[in-house]
Amino acid sequence: MNSHLKVNPVETSQSIRKTAQHLMPMQLLNRQEVKEGYNIYPICALGDQKIFNGYSSLTKWMVSQKNVVIEGYVGLFWDKIQEAINKCLAEEGLTVRWINTSDYLKAPADVDVLVAPFLGTEDSVWGTKCTLSLADLYQTENLSTQRPDETADINIIIGPGASLAGWDAAILYIDLPKNELLFRMRAGAINNLGASALTEAYKMYKRFYFVDWVLLNNHKKAILNKLTTIADGQWLADINWMFKSDLDNGLNKISHSVIRARPWFEPGAWGGQWIKDHIENLNKDVVNYAWSFELIVPENGLVFESGGNLLEVSFDTLMFQHQHQVLGKHAATFGDEFPIRFDFLDTFKGGNLSIQCHPGIAYIQEHFGEKITQDETYYILDCDKDAKVYLGFQENIEPATFKSVLEESQEKGEQIDITQYVQTYTAQQHDFFLIPNGTVHSAGTGNLVLEISATPYIFTFKMYDWMRLDLEGKPRPINIEHAFNNLNFDRKGAQVRQELISKQVVIEQGEGWQVVHLPTHVDHFYDVHRMEFDHEMFVQTDDSCHVLMLVEGEALQVETADGSLQQFAFAETFVVPAAAASYKLTNLGDRRAKVIKAFLK
Image (cartoon, rainbow, N blue to C red):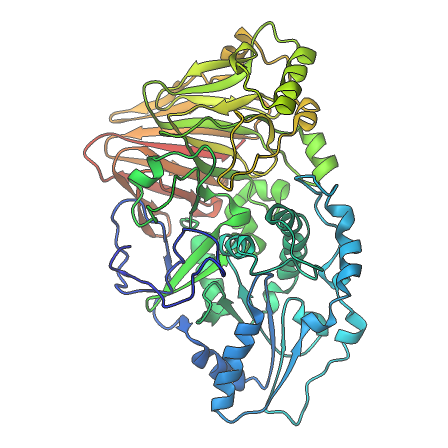
């Protein structure tokens, strides 16, 4: 890792977090942000004395409050947090009355019954978005009777839903990044909220996604403006915290300038070597990297810095308060759900993705409770000379025959020649393939794909997975029935090249610059431009959010109308919100810069 990052003496064993990824450091040793290519820990600097380190400083603030509500996310080690706070208070000789919200959850069997309608069948990969509220999981009539003890030096109610007790008291909210939650889940170190017993990881993830995250995100939204302080709970033995008013200032700042989420990275069955070879500070002792979660906002966070201390909050914290500044004229349509996704698929020296498709809008709404569907595109950021993309059907496709072949392959465990049914196209750098819902597709080996897509990201109906196992040695789920409920068999033959490979055209140009339009499909609610320039370009947001990436060149500088300056390296994703109004891009390299801009139609 870079010398300017301080690694914490925190437990990171596989019993706590099952991953090869480094835990984000708590502190920067050098407060000047170091730019050495792609930065895996991008920050928003807040100035001095805004973020504080340690339970000692936190408890000093708590003592001044007398009564404190400690709210937070599922997946935190609440017993460790209570133990650390209690130790500091005991050292001050203070008596504490603790109330744990876990004692007021409904019986696990009752909670299981409540959430069961949202989890699908026992073996299903997906559920549907939960329509309950967090209060439904609690014995609220008993929780609300728990009042502060006036004889105690300090009263603390702690755990998810603590504010449901209705205390007139300061609220501390402890957040947890989704990647760390998932690492803890895989280790079996945490469980779903109110669940009766640990289950397989995929069942826990399903319940997190469709139930716990929905309830807790809605609850966070409801209490966000009532918070006094906020803390980052991703470290086991320590904590960083800040006052909510200072966080508000930071969120307001980035909602008018530039936003970069903290990316995170995952190995996979088909993963490749490009990310390992080109992105510094990642753990290289992994078999591959398949994905970079560049901007998959349900699972990305935003990192703030003050005095060298780092604190991460979930991306929705920004959207709950600043959706209009971020999305501008499109906020009325999408609300607090950020609609565009950027991520990498790395198949360099790896394998093919599964042959797959995604659900139609009516299907995803009816079956899974999502508002928008998983319309995608593949932008080829890099590739080798033999790279290809699977896209659309052969002209002579017979749906019944294709389904029968897939089912027989799955039943007998036999490989098939998928090119008899699905077309392949040679991939070249900067090609742009369009994948509206219902389109059969896959990225072949030898690609670094930038997926520019709608935000939904887990609704992939795999039809054929090359008879391989995942990294745990288990078969990946095949979803032929779901796929055939959504496949568009009209996307075949010559129509595929005509409609699903974007015809790039220059739409504006001047001395030393041009703008190339990469038209998307009529089903896509976003469009894409590529800005190419030797020195600089000036861009208006037109009250719309822009998601950008330098896809050719070394580095660039972004200056927004409020005077904010930031630098970005090749392949870093960043967002210019609608409220920025305008921005200037300056090429910091020796060759022409090319910048992808995705925006809402």
